[in-house]
Image 1 (cartoon, one colour):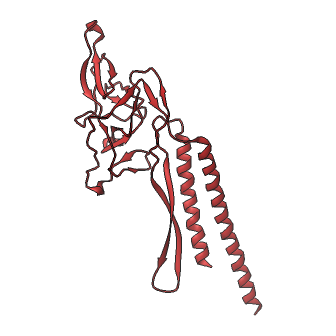
Image 2 (cartoon, one colour; image 1 turned 90 degrees about the vertical axis):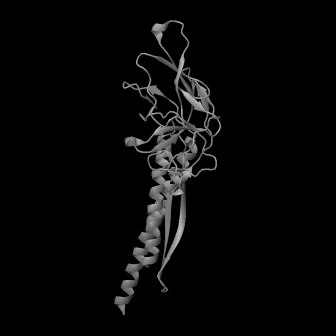
Image 3 (cartoon, helix red, strand yellow; image 1 turned 90 degrees about the horizontal axis):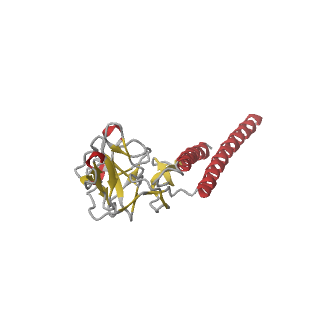
Length: 252
């Protein structure tokens, strides 16, 4: 009886994790460049050499759906949409490591650092955050070059100050953590960093939208909720069976 309860309990945990992932996808349906998370449930059986075995369901985020989202023109010179499989490199949260995303709604912070809509610093070719000279107007070329011009200089041509660190993940393992960023697992020996792709291109003045399909995600949310309810029903049934068995033993 306890095996039935244990199996149902682990399946309930997997259903709850699936609901969390689905809710996160739904919450980011309007986030530029967001890649929806793919959730998978893997059955596992624990054995200790006896006839007793424990089967459990283990659910986790398998990765990200890298299907391209819809590109929308914005007219903002700091908005960029990556082409092909290119990713933009950012400084990780708390300035730790390097993370990758397709989010291209860039802006200049009061400190002069170029950052995205989440406040993460954009990395340049050297791997350091890009800093814009105070008072300069900037634009971004199709190859990722950052061009800065001094409004006080009249018609003087814009000068390149850095280049966006664009990478191509093709052939490299990427993991998506609970912070929604793509990272290179350090266990692969790549030190968590992808090499720059000098051939990568982007579309200035446009944003790639999230690839989350709202209707499909809502259906997945309902399915996860029903799965949780079904497992809860199994546990209640097991409890009723256990009580009935105890009553039969008492009658003897």
